[in-house]
Image (cartoon, rainbow, N blue to C red; front, top):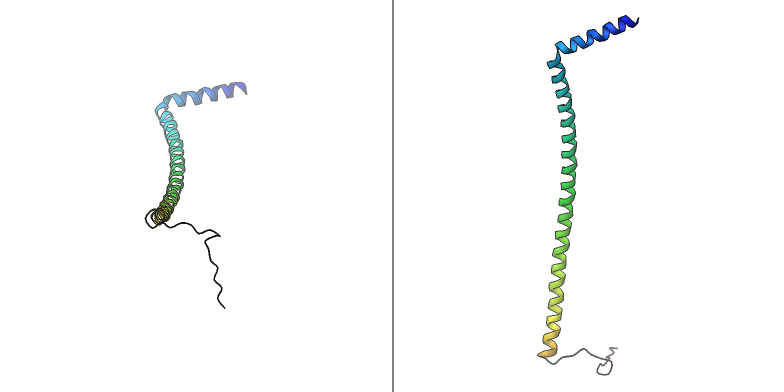
Length: 104
């Protein structure tokens, strides 16, 4: 029994030596296939990340535009208040200089 196993092992090794090029090519093809799977997976992850970052960029651009609009609006109000105070000598009404008018 042991002799048949040893002889079978020797026969397999001899066959592998005869077909060494085919064995090496098979291993190279297997490694290439696994590498292809890995690269495909990485590419899909990167595409997903790019989509997420693109969406985040769009959201930030919208927020930036809204903040610019708000800044311009606030600038206009402060400019109006400045012109009213400096050029027209207007001031914010207080309780003492306000008059309440009732309509019946």
